[in-house]
Image 1 (spheres, rainbow, N blue to C red):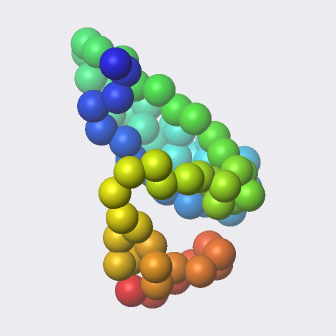
Image 2 (cartoon, one colour):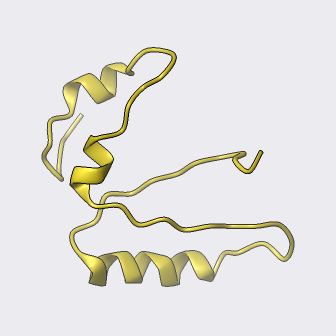
Length: 69
């Protein structure tokens, strides 16, 4: 199994994604693996919950990039 922790950030465009990629590279551990996967908002929206429930935060968030909780 590959996954231990999963983190995500929604950004506006590839330039902003590259900014965060560079920032992450500055904090990489000496050992282990860190992988980066870029998805469009449409691809992310197509994610399916196979087991468990959607969190209350996810229910409140619409398709907008910026949502205040």
